[in-house]
Length: 351
Ligand code: KG4
Ligand code: ZN
Image 1 (cartoon, rainbow, N blue to C red):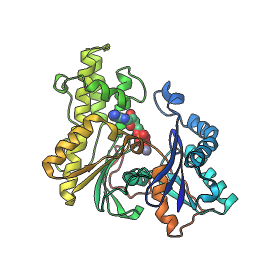
Image 2: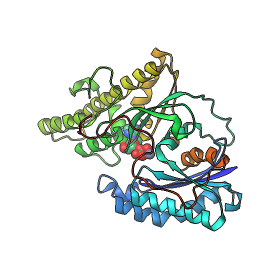
Image 3: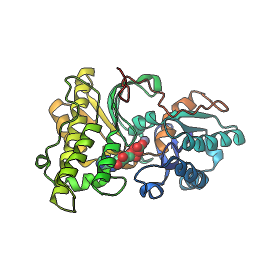
Image 4: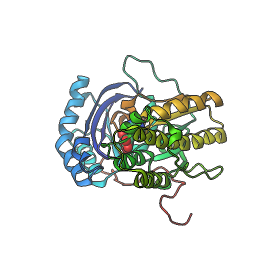
């Protein structure tokens, strides 16, 4: 049972072949980061055009690298939400076109469900990942920051416990990097510079210290950094830059982990999965390991290629539904919003 996964929700064009046990036969990702770098963020029109140019070569490469033909595939899984509408439609039309041409079944997958299940992906020669439900997951990426209780593979078995009220953690890293005059995406650069800095040297407020909350907020911290640069700038490639990176990263990581381990205790869970691009952050991984030791919790972090956007996680999230006989051919529905039930309202409106 082989599933073809297709992902085009943001700025990566991706296709992958995965079996129902999570073995990845191929995993092709074309990153558009160079097209968007000069704008310091993803430009939706550019993203759609880039997906259109690359979707067919990426799909062909996925079959070729796995040494398979489309006739070896049993079904197709494609990201239908959340993401940029024009970008999502490129992948969905590709999947729908393949389904009409071949009669293969197709299912629509929520990108966030893909991230949360990516922990089960493995190389064909590796044994299946030993991880049982339920587990807690911290999803931290450029577009999303939320805590989930995961009770099973289906969307209905995943509950949001709390999310960010404003910026996603990765977005905060990228915006702060821009304020410091660093490149895009800023997360990995800030992470690298933070290793040479001292967190205590730049006083920044810890975001949202409200007792007992499972919600996040990063826009205040970002403003804090902007004010500090206004008052103390301009910043060169010096020690102050490294100290600022270290202070900012320390505060983001503490804010993420205090809530995460609060949720672990509240839900009585023993396993924590980190997912999304920011899970690659060295500071976050190291601090998570020490929190985990203190609370007797197992932390599982997928390898970086499975944390960032890819189509293997989409294939995996769709494969058990295809095995069950689900088919949404002709009925795929796009949505810019996640289909997971939300508990945190984004923005400043009444709660
Ligand atoms: O999951 P992802 O590839 O794309 C989505 O947003 O869906 O995550 C990309 C985000 C970017 O904001 C990037 O700056 C951040 O993840 N990121 C990092 C690190 N590596 C990637 N943030 C902090 N530290 C890192 N090492
Ligand atoms: Zn993502």
